[in-house]
Length: 258
Image (cartoon, rainbow, N blue to C red; front, top):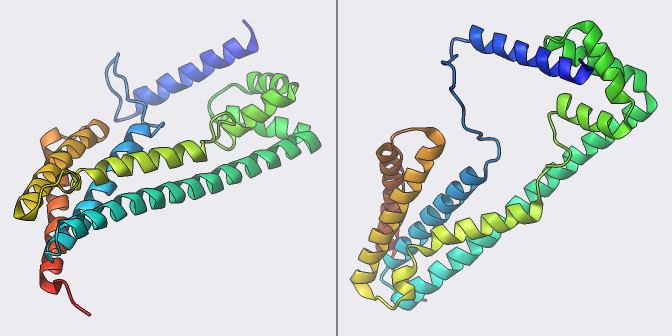
């Protein structure tokens, strides 16, 4: 049996021991959802941000009764301004995070080049702490360190918790943030884009926003495993509170002249 196979068996045994000792252990066949990617989470929260942000802006403006054209302009400004803001923020944060990860990996690459024996011992100790027998950990670490690329990949994963091939794309993150925010933001704007006017436009905007809030809340239940009606009701309540407050402010302030 090769060292890699032996390592896999050793780590599998350690994992099974940990699972059986845990008070949260489940019966055979139980599986957990993979929540690491975050794509669904990002999409749902992006739409939620867009919906709450723009329904508050639209109802706040509509509360002052300035005319449908002004509300439409405010809604469009909120949609594009918010979408660009989200996209730029996501791009900058993702770019900074990626550069930080790349810096850490570069440091690790330099350490492997300058102190290969020290890095080999470090890798062996990591495997030992995870329950791998010492002789197997030493043998495996020596084989891994023999290949510089594999050594760097292994150290990045085991020591830094990073996958060098999946550090995230700032452009993709920015595009996704723009799109998901825009989807949520356009919902309460629809009646004004379709030419509905007056009180009817406000009513339709509220109804559309409420349906959107319920849908987003139900989608959130896929992440939290809470009852869909609970997540939907919570999202609807929060959206309603935000819209009601801004509508009240708009009504109180009105359209000032001069």
